[in-house]
Image 1 (cartoon, one colour):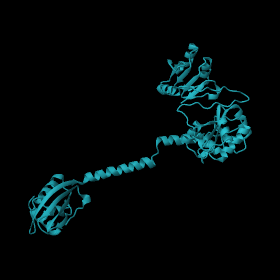
Image 2 (cartoon, rainbow, N blue to C red):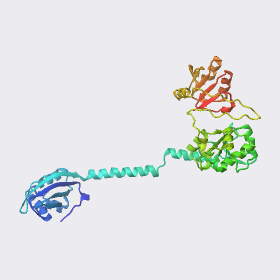
Image 3 (cartoon, rainbow, N blue to C red):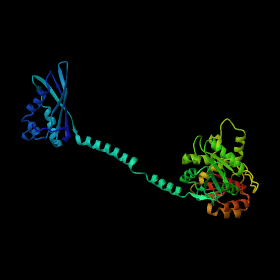
Image 4 (tube, helix red, strand yellow):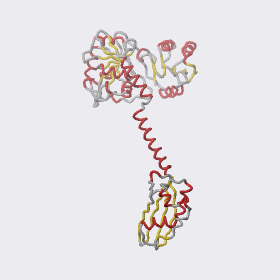
Length: 408
């Protein structure tokens, strides 16, 4: 007799059977074939359909409790849905099984293809996720990888000591001194190009010469070796700011986020000198000396140099007001002109800001602009006796002018 398994069926008939007595599974199957014989015609004769493989093996699962049997009849079918429904309805004509009264109720017809379709969809989702996560690279990752390799290729040698350095070390007004070549490579990889390595604890003459003409930030490892380098540099070179990597970490291994956080919290050399002379309970290894900084703040003024004294910026009021104005201007390429009481005298495009300042001549206390502060703007502002310039960023060192330069 031909058989058809569940895997080749299109539909599965589920029916419930209850029997007023105790019978065996073969009795139920015999009753199904016997009591439906001739009922549906030759084309839907169950024995013939099973012999031709159009219905599969009939499964009967029963339990007997208290002398009464009940269970489920399962019939797989490869007929169309109308013919399968007729077979299911025919089961309900069975009234006796052996000597016992019986009742059969067709519960449902399951479409096997729906279940397979759901399985296909779930598996496709898993395969697509695997493809996306582990095989296909993200376009941003490709861009960052290519950019990082290009930055690393930009490393140069500077001065007679042939120190490892970034490509902008000569033209930059501010530079970052690190301990070794690996530190330079990490900063280049993260977009910082105005860096140079000492190549050891002994300070090269090239570094000493650079410190005389540049604004210098020293970026050292978060260990005792970093403290020793700071002490040696203080003795032989003119440095302005100190930055330390997080405790126990080296500059060459920290992430871009850690680099930016450390540089934003750089400390003036005067404060570091006080810390080294009178060590507090927390050490220099605790990055940035755990200072609390406002959302917008001024960098500490540089110490006066013997060769070129510089003005010291005065404390700035209304930081929160300036910050709110700067947020309002973001993306507009505009500028606010304020008086001493922080009242807005007017708003102009940044392209017309210098001309407007020249025309007004006086009475301006503060400028807030959506842009970058350059030397030309600072010169015009100094002539107009402007006290504060608030901007997104500045190309002019904050220690190079008497104007308070405040950046986001």
